[in-house]
Length: 287
Length: 300
Image (tube, rainbow over all chains, first blue to last red; front, side):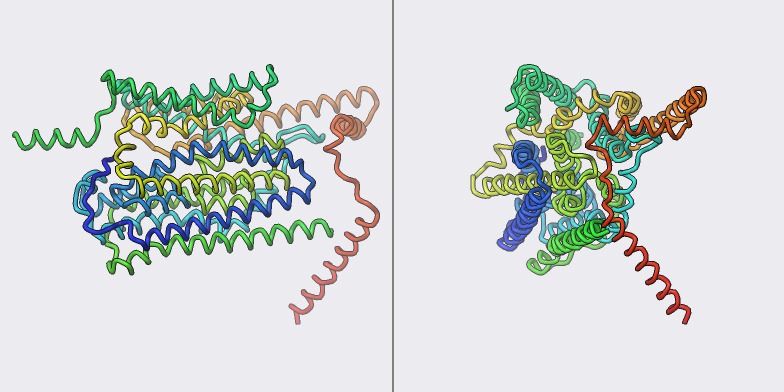
């Protein structure tokens, strides 16, 4: 994690930026509430099972808590460079911690010809702050612009394609393309995260923390399997809404425990870039 | 015809409302740097946008911004798209949440019910996320040294650093087991690729998501072609059997269709009433007449 000690020559968390953050929160809450009310009305009109709707809502709440805390903690990662309110704005709307860190790092490199860590350790001016805010905002607009201007045009085509069935003259035979596309995207995403965890291991198999992501995937998958068994074979239906967050929590707890003992017992971990940089400076000074 | 018209109208209205929400939201977000410039009375260093360190991630984001709406649109539906493209965190929160919600509701893919469930999941998830971030921001602003305490608790960083992996692990295992034909081949390819890239110290990061989807898509197309070939072979066999028993091929297909609808009555298409057929015929005639009038006017 990046050190949060940095030298701002001004207050990055001004009343204005908190006001802007407030406006973003109000807007997102209003939009979400509008769509919740709209969907509930539509569900009633379609005579959907309201019991299931309630379950969907409660599951979506429990499901989102842990990732949301993870996103919230991500604010801490960026505090050193841009204060509290700006990362909160950026992480509350389109974007992600990975993207924000990448753009902040890119802007910092361009401003001081060094990394984000060097930038945080330097004196940060108003102009640096405004530059980083601009760099983080502009590139993210592509996705929403595509949705605003082109989604209406290609959505019916995607919908028609999804409704088609590949092959088969008799109903029920062949593969539904919509179903297939859904599986392709979701399994592809699972594989993407699996690949990220494998690359991390392969790039430094000697460091224990490179295994954390892979451990989390495996433990969560095993826990989910056990939960499914308990739901289906032991009739523990109440577990259904909590099985995903519970599996995630157990996986994260296992990683936290391993991490705690790694620090306690001095097991091999990736060297802290700040410490590496400090050591390099000392060596350079001695030479 | 009336029903078709209503669906098209509703679809068009959903797009209009979604565009308005997303348009105003983006206006609010994009003007934040401008407000900051005015407040601090400084201008951004525009030359930064010409540096490689900013251009390369910008290109990556632009490409991802084009691909994401196409890739995710069949999953989140119309309303969900407009909402999720304002609130973000699609791959690491909204999409898995939609998948879980649709799994619970058991809705038919592409149906209106499916769309309702997806929108609800995205909206609820957005609310929870913004509220939790708000609470954390409040704590960070009010509690002294909290930032340093979180910074010092390394195990917290490790645990929350792998939250997305835990999420995909919990949902993913079941999907992979249920779809071995689609998953096993891509898993082998992606694992080999990621290990090779890792050994060479190359990390494509989130671009892996698109690699995973692309490899799966290739396997899905291959699987569909194989399925099509199998069905063609089955059709040939059926035709031969029909000829051998003195029955026509169409008759065999009709019998199988009827048998399928007997087994799955919920999938049987609703029969049109005489009034609906008449209404459609009138609408078609009116459309034809309008076209003729339009072409005449054009010629004049």
